[in-house]
Length: 188
Image (cartoon, rainbow, N blue to C red):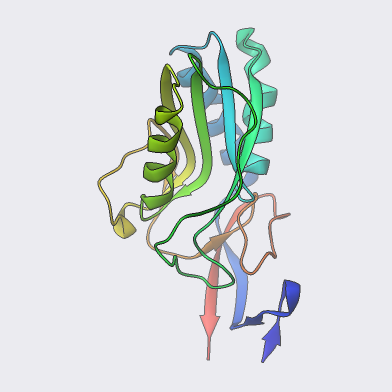
């Protein structure tokens, strides 16, 4: 048995197949910021869902200056995966935001829209706190896995039902550093 970060057991796997290269990601991030800037951007708070969104969110933030947008930033740490490769279906808040979002336009950023449970539940929680508006932005949209009716306002790429890593996404807290999105192939 192989063990990953934190001593959790890992399946035998490889991450050789690149699905989206770093240049394609960079171009799409700029396009997403152009789309986001066309919407409400005054009193903007960008809320990233950790850990997976941190690389994507950093690139989005650096691109806002092109539109003279100066958002505040905060983070949520949520968990629905534990140490596995499939969602448990339960969304646990590990660390909550500290910014007062009353009357703010919130951009909720996540790495991947999979079952839809995490973003749907989080959007409802933030609306209940008095946000003026909440838009969602995801790097990847995996429609084949949707368990609840939910669509992101801004999505970078649609992907097939593969387990992927890189650009902040992980398997057992590994591979976040990859500059591209790669498919994880599991073996016996």
